[in-house]
Image (cartoon, rainbow, N blue to C red; front, side):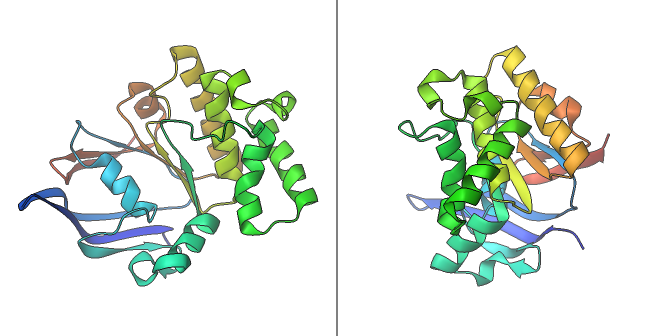
Amino acid sequence: MAIIEVVNVDKIYNDSEVKVTALSNINLTIEKGEFTAIVGPSGSGKTTLLNLLGGLDSPTNGKIRVGDVWLNELKGSKLIDFRLRNIGFVFQSYNLIPVLTAGENVELIMQLQGVPAKLRKQVAADMLGKVGLADRFASRPAKLSGGQQQRVAVARALASKPQFILADEPTANLDGKSAENLLQIMEHLNQTEGVTFIFSTHDQRVVNRARRVILLEDGKVKSDTLQ
């Protein structure tokens, strides 16, 4: 069974009595272990689709299934808890908490999940090791490069043991070397541990590594190709 199913989804925004159709009749399935890039020009609906897949927004029409749960059937705290336990997020801006160390940033999501302190620390150290930052557990974000901060964000997403990770323009704020390093790590996690990654991106480096590319234009799926 696919881990994500998108059925006849539309997203329409009403702004000052003007309707803007961000997505129109989207139908998709995502299988476990995919390394998929959602691409398209600005305004094509990439980030909107990612937000819907992550339960950060809800469709105007249609429905989305994650695992065996239909997101449209979850409300309020139940939806928040489901996101916390099933969906990992990596954003363009790293969204790390400045006063916390790298390890504490990774631990935070597990703390929200109710994981005991000793286990949180063990898992955080393990996750930072997986992204090549075993020696930066005690470093605060200000002492880390942009690439290192984004790797902490990946470790944080992994720590929640999600069904999949959504990465919205994760390389946009990185220099070329840092972007390549990050992508190598994510690709390695995908290939060796089966971590499912879904990217929204303009970056051709991400597209080149993706095994599936979904092209959006004007809120519609223009093409969906394996490579």
